[in-house]
Figure 1: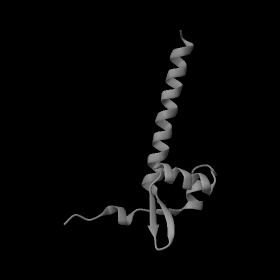
Figure 2: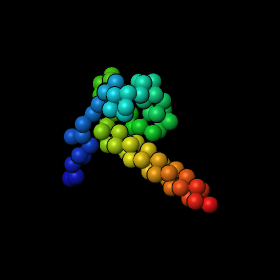
Figure 3: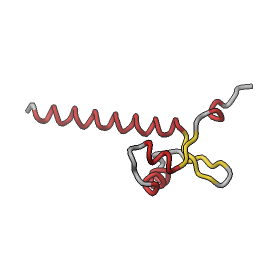
Figure 4: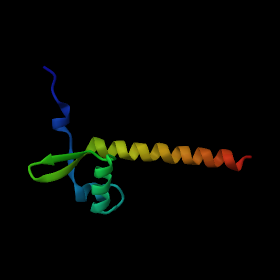
Length: 78
């Protein structure tokens, strides 16, 4: 029987997640959850954010920024 390692993952409150993402508002976090950019996890009545979801969002943002920079560099060289 395989263990669910997600049960051991760190969870952050919406306010903590907002601070970790550079001080965005809690409303932005909720909007990103609604759009599917962040995974919502409920613990009792609280909405929490998994650490892996935060890291995934940061990684996606880094990849998009790198693509923008690369595109800008290639356009500037023409």
